[in-house]
Amino acid sequence: MSVRLPQPELHTPRLHLREVRGDDALALYAIHSDAQVMRYWSYPAWTQLAQAQAKVDDIARQRREQDILVWAIADADSDLLIGTIAVFAWNSEQGRAEIGYSLHRDWQGRGLASEALQPVIEHLFNERGLRRLEADIDPRNLPSCRLVERFGFQREGLLRQRWQLNGELCDSALYGLLCQDFRPGS
Image 1 (tube, rainbow, N blue to C red):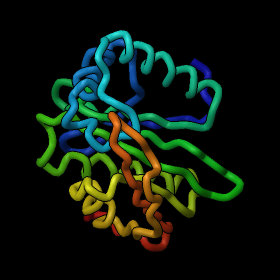
Image 2 (image 1 turned 60 degrees about the horizontal axis):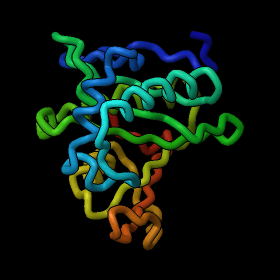
Image 3 (image 1 turned 60 degrees about the vertical axis):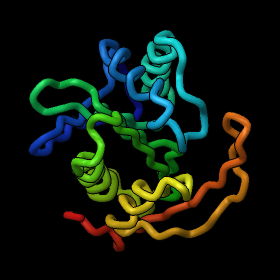
Image 4 (image 1 turned 45 degrees about the vertical axis):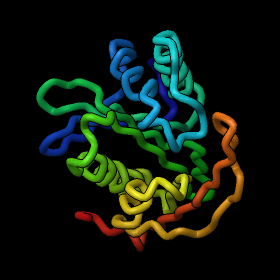
């Protein structure tokens, strides 16, 4: 597959961060079909496995056509996809991009999201030369807000009623991280 941005595999003691593969669809579906995991996303939980396969196909297409990176967060021992990290809205000229992440409910609360985000952020700042990362988080998602704040992200604004999901109007807290404010090892 020809890609615009090369995406390295990254390793941590418990995780293997790699490209999303076709055989990841079932594991991706397990994450995105969980209403609890998807509670604060801008789209509802999936209801069909075909949605996961379409997403895997879409990731491959985006990697060929756009400046986007999507890492599978995989368990280092089994290589099972347990989450994803996406870097999108990439603007090389401005040195900025947006970052988003998800983690299967059974793997939450173990520090794995932090363990996965750190090498990705380091790669984006040190290897890709970005100066700014942004995250859009539902302000009610306190664990996610605390996670990015530990790395030095600052809450820079609130977009009121930005999303309408399942009949509910939802706000977005906008977070920004400058390279010089990054706190690794958080």
